Length: 316
Image 1 (cartoon, rainbow, N blue to C red):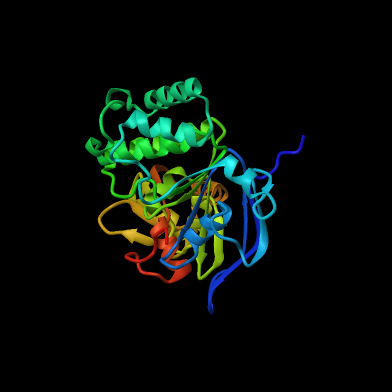
Image 2 (cartoon, one colour; image 1 turned 45 degrees about the vertical axis):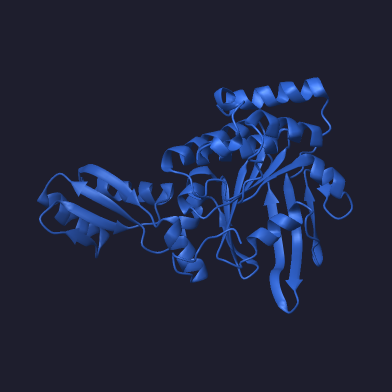
C-alpha cells in the first residue's frame, strides 16, 4: 500500500486582478506531521490555506489533500479536513456543550453519537467543568480550546490552523502546543500559520518561508538556521595554554577577554562539531564547556525576505 502525502501541491497560482498572490507554489506535507508556512503580510499564506481547503479556486496548478484533488473532489477534501481560523467560530449564546453538539449536527452525526463525541472532546480539552456555561464566560484560552474541539468533531485527518494561539497568554499558548502535539501523535496532519516564530520552531517538523507568492526556503528549523551566517560554537577551555594552542590550530577566532573562551564560526552541524573536537583533541586541548549558538528564526526570516521583525509574519 502506497502512502500518499497529506498535502501535495504543484505550481499553484493565484492572482487578484493584476496582483499575483501565488506564483507557482509547490508543497509536499507528509501525513502525521506539522508543517508551518511563514510569510509577511500579503505573502500568500491565507490564500494558500483557502485554496487547499477549497474555499478559493486556484488559477493554475494542482493540489491534493488527503489524496483527493481539490478541484475534482472538493466534497471529499472538505470531509477530510478541519479549519481553525484566526477568529473564533464559537457561538457566545451557546454553552460549550451546545457548540459541540451543533457541530455534530452539521457533521451529520446521530443524536447519541453527537452527545458522545461532544462529551469526549470536552474531557480531552479540559472543558468538562465548563460544559454547561455560556461560551461568553470563557477565557481566551478556553475559547481557543473550544474552537479547536469544534474543528475535531468530524474527526478530520488534516487540520489547517491559522494563528491558533494569537492573543493567548504564555501558559495557554503552551497548553495549545501540547494539544497540537497530541493530535499529531494520533496521526493528524497540521498545516500551521503563525505570527510567533517561536511557535513554528517549537512545533513544526518542516517550515516553509513564503515571499511574494514564492517559496524561498523550506526545511527543518535547524536546517534553515544553518543557512544564515552568524552561527558559532562557544568553547570554554581549561587554561590559557589551551586557548593559545586552539588559536594556533584553528586560526583567527573571536576571543573573550579575561576568560579562557573562544568563539569558533560554525554552522552547528554534527559533522562540523566532530571535526572541531577532533582537531582540539589532536592538539591535546581540554574543553571544559561547549555550547552551540545558531541564528534564530527571526534572523532566518529577515535574511530570506528582507522584512523587518515587526512585519515579518502574519497569516494574511
